[in-house]
Image (cartoon, rainbow, N blue to C red; front, side):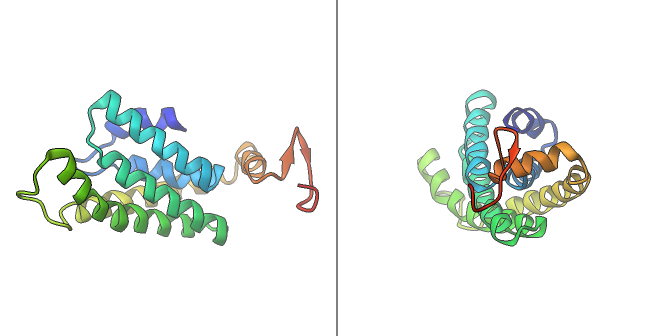
Length: 167
């Protein structure tokens, strides 16, 4: 998942938007849950910053989107919850937190304001969440994807199905 995100993000990038990060967040949390999905987003953001020269916006957008998407998916057990969590986490929270991060990063607030990143982050999050939804529809019919989801939920341990009471 990390490799896919790092490789696909620059290929399908619109200036100021990273819809593939939102796609991978929605898919990652629906597969692995909030903890692993957020860790995936954090590692991807750091790799994109180090390898591709992306500013810290890679972290502020992706991490909060993945966290909210993961929590929403966990509690709703619905891809729609993950999509809404991604849009709110990246589009709103991530965009607003990007302002102080970029002021610190650049050393100046000249020409910047709180909602500077919001339209682009919302655009990337909405388009990425929609693409993630369509990919999820296809993946959710694949037996291996379903098995991996059950594994990350703790329903399969060492190849054996266990009940919730046992785990």
